[in-house]
Image (cartoon, rainbow over all chains, first blue to last red; front, top):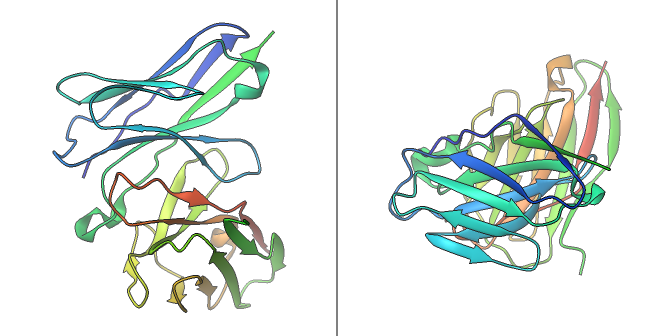
Length: 112
Length: 114
């Protein structure tokens, strides 16, 4: 099972780039890395997913080094509306992976 | 397209009462999940259903039962509610349980047990 470790919280000013790193030392060969965003009183929302190297979409980039033991979510030029909790998730929901957990996530606070 | 719909949105129960939380998805997904989220904590998996007719325990299954009624619906039942089950409950679905299939979440059911 790929347990993940993230910083508990981060602070940023509006307009800055924010990088959130997730550690997953025992990631399995077939595991993808997925990041979710959660606003208060809402369910988590998918942001981005990757397997290796770099993935970019309209809201974020995901950097994954060759050993895949960590990943970094990059949010360019954050705004106040990016204040949320960010979770990384690694692993399959199959068999012994039934204890897969989102962990406590990283609480990002963006201010002016 | 509603995605994942949870009912009710809010509920207050007394200790010992029973209740069923309902979840339905319209994305033709095979896998469905129930999580609980306590204040300041992440989501913990209660039960998981890989496909219609199958269910598996997650990290915190004690005190709960589930039913995968059909491909669309996955319900969570509290037989005898306890104050420790006060939480926000999220249902999610995905095309499969493999890690390359992102989950889609409902907006949650806020449950208080007195």
